[in-house]
Length: 105
Image 1 (cartoon, rainbow, N blue to C red):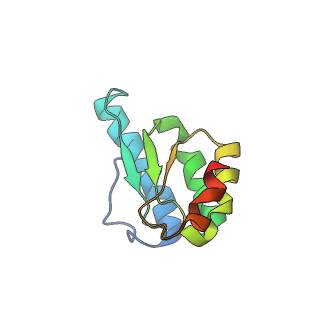
Image 2: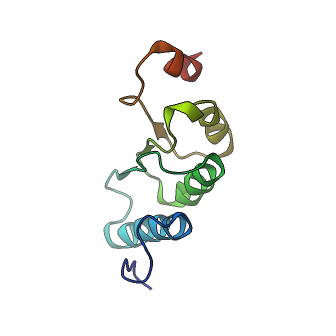
């Protein structure tokens, strides 16, 4: 079935985890793998949900997923990188070097 936002709430976490991969599945089915899609999560997921979403997005080969977690969960970015291939983007939310250094060390 095509992606339908009328059936589930957009920011209900469980619905979000189902809807976003479905949406990218529909986009890939329609446009193929030529376009470089990205998605900004706006850091509203908990760490275990962020891992699940990143893994669910793997088949859709996003260019990157942005702000999958808030800066206070920066340690989980390494874990996400270890368990899935979806590229991560993060940055404008950092306000000091202590927040981003763990990502580049």
